[in-house]
Image 1 (cartoon, rainbow, N blue to C red):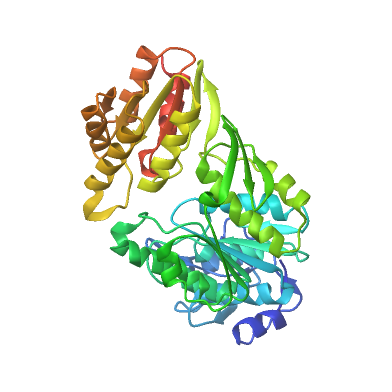
Image 2: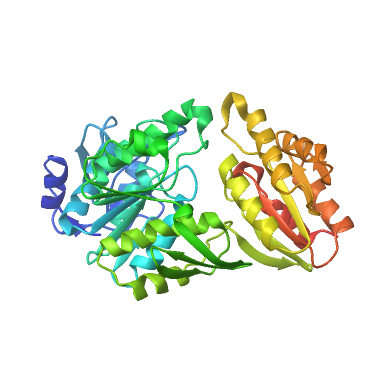
Amino acid sequence: MKFTAGDIEKAIGVKVDIEGSFEISTDTRTIKKGDLYLPLSGANFNGEDFCDKALENGASACFYSKKECRNGIKVNDTLETYLKIANYARKKYNPKVVGVTGSSGKTTTKEMIYSVVSQKFKTHKTFSNHNNEIGFCQTVLSMPEDTEVLIIEMGMRGAGEIELITKYAQPDFAVITNAGSAHIGRLGSLDNIAKAKCEITKYLKDTLIANNSERIKKFAQFNGNKVFYSVNDTEILEKKSGYSKFSYKDKVYELNVEGDYNIENSLSAIELGYRLGMFYDEIKCGLLSYRPIEKRWEAQNVRGFNIINDSYNANPESMKASVSTFLELYPNPVAVLGNMGELGADEVEFHREVGRFIAEKFKNTKALFLTVGNLASYIGSELAKQNIKTVHFDDNIATSRYILDNLFDGSTIFLKASRSMKFEEIIEFLKTGD
């Protein structure tokens, strides 16, 4: 997206003496001749240290807040400047903006919404999970100028972060998938998590579309239109591996994925589609075109093992839901469950709770459970109390070795853990191990 000096002056209120038009770059490694360099800082780096390098690589000028440089544009804060420029572009091209947040399912929901909305509109979305304030700016500044709907995924690790993004995104529509225990270690309570998710309504213009949760209803301080949805509002007509069919508000929809939680996630896309003026056939076709992205129920065959990799992230709610779907639908099931992160002082009890849930719901299961990591062992201990076969491992290599030595071709292996467990190592070892 190109800007003139006049655009930047309007966006940030600072004089910019550059001719022509230019793009904004935050990376000296990819900067192009004529770009305007906007340095950002992190815990271990300060982008302002690289202003000279940016100029050497062709930048026309650099923003700076502390370290004065030649061809410099002085601002109070470079991240705030980035946000203001993104907000200017959002208002200048004026797409309908959809903000999506939640403790789990927000990336899947964003992708489902994109699959639906792009059936009718020129649509742009957050790439992968680039859902912080920098990712927001990158998303806006990479959108085509004729974008009609802009979908912004909003993540957070603490209070105030979603409010910051929504301040500059100014969403027309907001979706809250749920408010569960993810990040409870940082926020301290489920109420605080719900409050943080509901920050998305602070600058909301039109409609809130949210999971039918009492906590969300309590903390969503928004006087506009509100729509609450739940899988309990549906009639599930058919579910099998890689397919779901359901009825919602007297209309039938299909998904090429399994899981009640995916059906629930899709309801926000349905509700949004109608509010954007879409027809039933367009929405139905959009849902059917949805495909999971990497590490979200990603299926592959390795050495005769059918592997389902859902290890992008994990919290108690998502682990209960995904394991339930797996055990209900797949033959010869082997569930590999790892540590769930950021659960705070009660992390052991959260892992025990998952084990108790599975043991109670599937007390007669013939599935094999492999637990990996110190915390996941507590899941296994609860399963073992119900005589469910469980084997524990300390690391991914030992887990992989056990699979190769003890399981038979045709087993379906489900991987679920927080990203920090690096369960992709299990798949790689199965591919290359003896």
